[in-house]
Image 1 (spheres, helix red, strand yellow):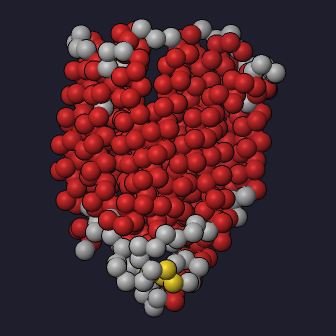
Image 2 (spheres, one colour):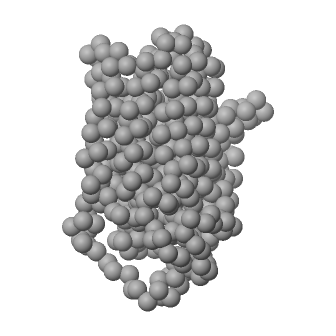
Image 3 (spheres, helix red, strand yellow):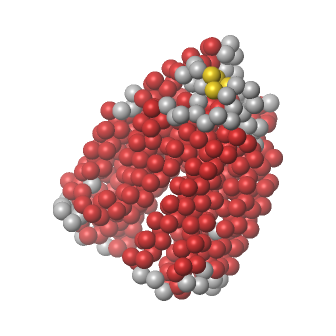
Length: 407
């Protein structure tokens, strides 16, 4: 059992890296595809909304299918189809085909996203200790791999379609090979016990508890802040602080590196101090970091602020995903899809909200909205304490003490 559990954990790492690399492969080819199709930046922005809407729809569908069929079935299918449809944007000759390609790719990438997080919830439950943040760190690692591969493809003079097809083909093989190690997570056909102690029949749609929507709103606020950093960090250093473009580019790199490092460390912190502490003090650290960014006139202090912002945010989303999966284990897929879906919409909205605020206040002052969101998240972190208590209650009532497994 321990060997199969370790294999399932490794497989889940692979799927997270795969998801990050597929998104990264699209991102690194955006300039070439934009030029070939002949669209403006504004039109591209509208197309990216379609990518997000497709992902949101895929998350909702995959969440229900994962609860019904099990992540062992849905996750490999999502991985294969997301990899296969990656090439579609690279082949699109005009605006309308590119719009359809992004919608389809977004849908299946959303399926992959939710099913891998739902499987991660089951693996974490079997380990009986926090491991979710490390999975999310692997998503970031996948993006780095895609950037390196994309640079190599561009230097070799390969077209986006060839490069994306190559990454997609490797993704299909990876998804199929890793499928055998996944846990059999399909819920039993008999009535299962919900997290509130009530009984729910299999196949009957559960009404999500109110706590799920609280977790979803918190995910939306945290991911809105993350999305804003993705798009505005470099522009802040260049336009507000007057840094050279080459220096400003390191702002996002500093943020992303700090976030990846934090996710690699967050599981140990969560295991020692609990997920509520990671969410609360992480949000506090993020609030302090972005406030420094908002008020400092010094470039070196801005770098420190972006690093603290990324480090603070790093463990927040994994704790929210993990908690949503524990509320009702038999509906983990649907609940994760709700939290991930609303969070993803927040990430898409982040750059636009900050951009809108720049019509009213300077860019650095617009970042104070992110300070407010992080402060609200810190104050609401007690919702994770409630979730942990209920989970322990269910474990005691089932008379099955948790079993620890060494990594």
